[in-house]
Amino acid sequence: MTTTRMELVCPAGTPATLRAAVQAGADAVYCGFRDETNARNFPGLNFSRDELAEGVRFAHDHGSKVLVAINTFARVDDVDIWKKAVDMAAESGADAIIAADFAVLDHVARNHKQIRLHLSVQAAAATPEAIGFYAAQFGIRRVVLPRVLSLQEIAALNRAIDVETEAFVFGGLCVMIEGRCYLSSYATGKSPNLNGVCSPPEMVSYDEEPSGTAARLSGFTIDRYGRGQPVGYPTLCKGRFKAGEKTSHLFEDPVSLNAGGMISGLKAAGVTALKIEGRQRGKGYVSEVVRAFRKAVDAVEEGGEAVDVDRLLAGQSEGARQTAGAYEKKWR
Image (cartoon, rainbow, N blue to C red; front, side, top):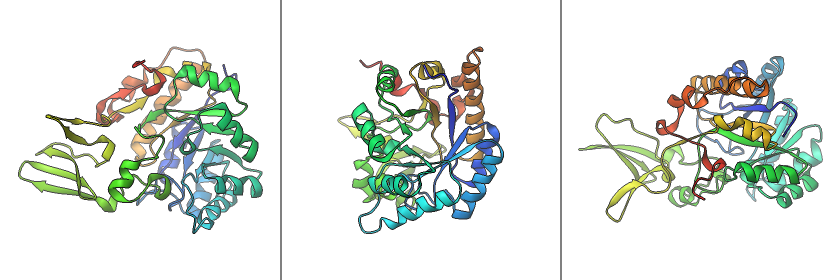
């Protein structure tokens, strides 16, 4: 069991949500630049150089850290975009850089030794050998764990490595191996790992039909909604499709990860930091989720009564449904 207090790492898709997360009790926030170097490259999100510098000042003034995600994979013809992002993060005073690409990791390790280097979940490192390689080659201090490991597997991993681990506790799930989405690439020609966006907005359309609304991605019908029904964003893995005579969510049901009831178990497994997903979400969502997890983490650390995070955040879960994901592999 880790003897240090677990760090609560929270999403900041905009300067406003950065401030909201810090004020709600985040120990650290993670964010990215307004370009393809980060895996949430949506219009209206992310930071300019000046906004990041101001965000770092605000966070540090309130005792929080800022981690900058430069976690997509660099293009062979323009690695300099990713190197420039690293340099800007360093100049802004960021506390850590989250990266997966070898060129980005190497640039940080060679040129910015003062900054902590965290291995992004996009690297999908889940064995002592893989994590040991990144630690030996680039000096990573923390690895963000893929969302496919059980508590028992995380505990065994922590016993075998010498770097910190960070585990997701709330937010979206993905049926692919941490962003390696061939479904999205097939439909749109853009990869989340390379272009930083799943279901690019310019390829999304909502078409009115006699029975309601069809949500489409690059011309593919992802879901249909009856008149008056709330219309969701068309993400391929969460669409409804017909197989045989049955129409259902073939790949994944709309559901959110909520491991709020497993904080004690994650601490016992040696996890250093708990991560909330949701850089594309607004201030209200971020504030509510961070406040709930702040209470829950503090209760565990202080030996108090457990906080019912499932109840507190039922309204913030996708499809109003929650799961502990792979932490409890009940299908075994």
